[in-house]
Image (tube, rainbow, N blue to C red; front, side):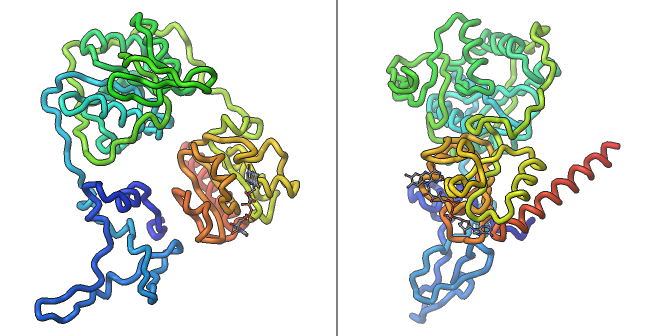
Length: 407
Ligand SMILES: Cc1cc2nc3c(=O)[nH]c(=O)nc-3n(C[C@H](O)[C@H](O)[C@H](O)COP(=O)(O)OP(=O)(O)OC[C@H]3O[C@@H](n4cnc5c(N)ncnc54)[C@H](O)[C@@H]3O)c2cc1C
């Protein structure tokens, strides 16, 4: 795995952004310079760049374009300045959704908005329920952390969580409560919190400017301007995620412990659903096939083994390999999956439009220069059938290994 060349989208973005404090550190090394005695010195190691297939390329035309290799950037270079808030004048409390125990891109946008509202005097407080696996809270603007990990906060328990937030509100009186206006958790939790505090929340907020909020209204067709409210339920892309500072993530010290109350709602656990029946617009994990899929039975087998919902490009649908409702893209369904695995899809603009809101895009393709790979978080260059077959074998071996370990 360590041999794989992975793009780091954040580092690439910093390398393009001349105003970023780390911009200089992420520039390619100088190839030649004039030495003290007037002789031109050349650095043979700086020539060339790592191509998408992991092989070093040297452009002899002198028009070297991709001199930047994110992997060559040392960790020290990525040490961002530390933002300290010793004595917070006030708190901006954020309750991220943390699907799968990690910050979603929606959560990161929300933390960016919190940072904007906190300024230099306030502290951003993240309130996280149940277990989490997130290791990048410091890079996402969290100054203080309240992690409530008692059993009572596990599973679906909105009234218990709201009660905890109410207790926190009484102690800290945060200037703002920010929650993602999402279907998975924040939308409901935020509305319940607002009702229990007797306050009117601002919902579906997509922009905060000074003392004014813009939110979606009229079935998403209109904007509603309103004064800044204390409880804000915000949409994805409401602000830029934090990218220029590191934060302390200190455990929040409270005068009185937050006590979970007994639950009225009983969570009987998740119900297994057939991913094949899940509507594309609601699917969390999509395996999508295009014109580069050579073996469709193998593709269906891979979807079933991975537990993914099937999607397709328009060409795959037009050729009769997949039904029309499975088409992803501008004239198909716009999807919001957390993981979108595209097999043999070139990345035409109409297809890319449909996956704009996907969190992580993984691509299997023969052509390292195709547009789908430019959009990818992880790309595997190779034949679709060979890679799908290997993927099925790996997943089955992993599951059998897991079952043996459990026994
Ligand atoms: C008005 C309009 C609306 C459209 N709407 C949509 C839409 O909603 N959705 C949509 O998807 N398209 C849409 N299209 C079509 C779109 O422009 C592209 O034609 C289409 O997306 C291409 O599909 P594809 O990537 O599967 O096929 P291709 O463009 O043919 O790409 C196939 C890819 O597979 C790779 N490949 C080939 N063999 C292999 C192999 N053995 N292993 C791995 N990879 C391999 C190739 O390198 C290539 O990248 C629309 C077009 C128009 C004009």
